[in-house]
Length: 140
Image (cartoon, rainbow, N blue to C red):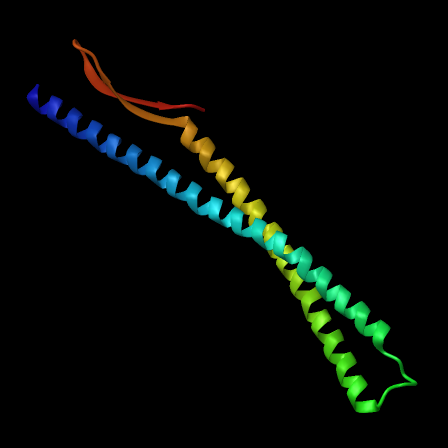
């Protein structure tokens, strides 16, 4: 009889340790994916002004360029430099927007998933003057 009780105590302690690790793992994953979602949101916020600034530079370069009044080398180099920087900024803005949307969506969905897992799992102790034990609840 003593052996059976000792085996049950060892098994219940093992289940208790695994449940604690699962809760800690869920908390860690929630924190990690929340950081990913925040990074995606920051990329979205930064990408819009970057793309608009690039588009504005391209428009300014087109308006400033005048073929009749230009010395060939100075105006062409100024035009292509401004237009090139604008094109790079537009490309960078579009890339950051796509990456930011992807990170924000994936991070948000994973946070919801692991918060749901954490809410389903509940582990605690049951202690009264007459009884003592461990409670483990998992909701489907």
